[in-house]
Image (cartoon, rainbow, N blue to C red; front, side, top):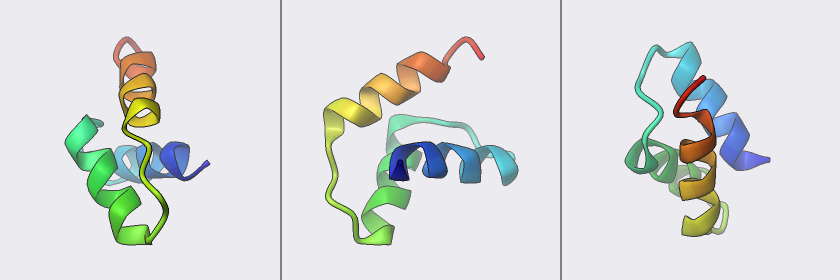
Amino acid sequence: MEYVYAALMLHKLKKEITEENVTSIVKASGAELNEAKVKSLVASLADV
């Protein structure tokens, strides 16, 4: 869920949803990072 919340936060702040930005938010939250999930999320949202 933290990956989706990171994407929502970036969208709300009008920032680009990139692997780097999502990774930064997830790391800052203290959650364990799974790079495959980040890549999957960013790819899924690319055309939205």
